[in-house]
Length: 172
Image 1 (cartoon, rainbow, N blue to C red):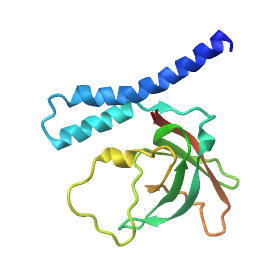
Image 2 (image 1 turned 45 degrees about the vertical axis):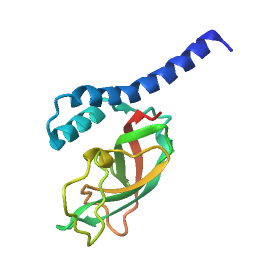
Image 3 (image 1 turned 120 degrees about the vertical axis):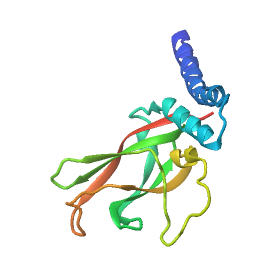
């Protein structure tokens, strides 16, 4: 094997491990002196966002799913329901969804909070660790909804969508 190819593969492997370790290191470093659950959760959120990197265009086809448009939430806000499958080697922390109605330019929606509220369910108690809802682990599926209004989407309109971008942390 060519030495430069071998070096390139080793560098790529080290880079991936370094990013995952960077998140862990960030959390461990900044947790020192945290005096409350809220502070600890805020540190994890900040470290997750700080250590996320753009996924390459080659990785994006490994993020697939199905989408629908409707009204969500207690106020009936317009938005999208997305079922995503992450077949990348990354813990996905953000997706940019492009939605286009036939004959119109696509609109882009950045989503970094993958929350789903089932109809009729009332949540009680303290909120869970927010980073659980800020990640789609490798080789898993997640359902979430996000707000977004596109007036041109009607029952007869032809529209398409795709994942235009994503961020994530390399998974060990």
